[in-house]
Length: 446
Image (cartoon, rainbow, N blue to C red):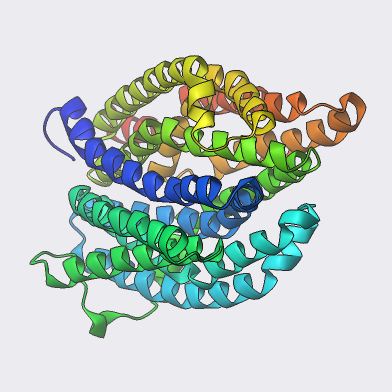
């Protein structure tokens, strides 16, 4: 990504990411769709209420995986093959060991975490089954994120797409087989997801072990290099910590939703799945921006990095707002696909119409953060998002929800905090020398 037309490079890289994320979202949504239609609203509420809790653990390692991707992309762009290989093998070894530990801890702690979220007693048993089963296979989710990050860092976004398509089909088939044919409970939807994710990991590793390239994986080289791990953590820990604390804030948000009953849980959970599809363009352009900026700054071409950043940000923001407008118009039909309850439908439609019109603000936050992460400035978006998406968001909820007694404030807290965070990141983006260009000009005298 260090040569050629900038827009074409980013779009060509982003399209497979979009399709891959689309299929990943499809098989995540398959759980909700199949459960809601075949097992009822109690089961749908159980699955929906667990999303923020699951991302609490997955998001932490996804953030650190971003740091690994930044390090690998930097070394790849600079032609530092030995350092790149150390980063790849250190990442695989570290995340595998961490994934095993987190799988065990998450499975045994699922019920306690759900109780802390004020999960209603009528759905607690099913929610515990689903979350505990999901967490037991957490290592597969973590390893897939690492393998996908390695491929994306070297500019390969096509093969993760192929593997996601295969695993998505497998997940949907297993969902219908386990629940529709065999009559298993909500826990089987989590089993289907874990098995399909394991298939993705196996396919990714098969590709990485067989490819004739400098980034080929060799199990004999799997070891944790301390200096390389320190660099990965330097880039990734801010993002991982950021994801986790934001997830804690979202758990607080979910606990407030839970207070309004299972219909609110089901309706807002259905909206969350729709929102997942809506943000796919933002997700893929954010990943493309991070890789593009990392590689070009590694190749010491800051001006190209800045041009690519501007194109990616503008494209993602425009796409997000168009999609938001479509959701506002189609919300009743979209939410209705997940639930037959009129009460749940009303909760989902209200949340859709409040949040969707402000998608451009969330897109701006993610893309500006992606630029700064690619430039190795991960602490800045971490601080901005923690302050706005966590502290301010939680403070608003604890002050206004008891006073007003309405779920509307839970919905409005998102666009309010998106606006604040976008403002902070935009100020830094336009005023700071995140690309290191001014420092270069001072040294060269240009």
